[in-house]
Length: 116
Image (cartoon, rainbow, N blue to C red; front, top):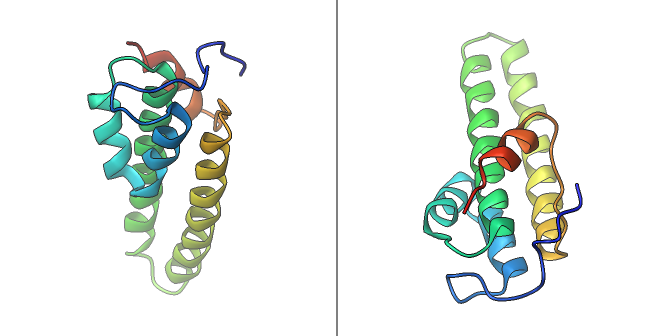
């Protein structure tokens, strides 16, 4: 996904767009949600805010569902925890580098709904 909207300028929060995009992932879904609703000037920040929110809520739902499954559930939860950690780091780095990195399915939804 190559948008021309990222230009390294300030977002409406006063932070550089890449820093605000990174912070969207820092506090898991909470900071993503905050930045999605607060941001008025940067589609880049809104995109990462919404993608972060949907990603981490989805992972939490998967962990909640498998929490009820004996034996196999704990293995799945451990795998999802590892995946969550890896995605958390990767997505923060990509946002900080100014990348419009779209996750499968979630990224398309975030892209369509990150309107100013």
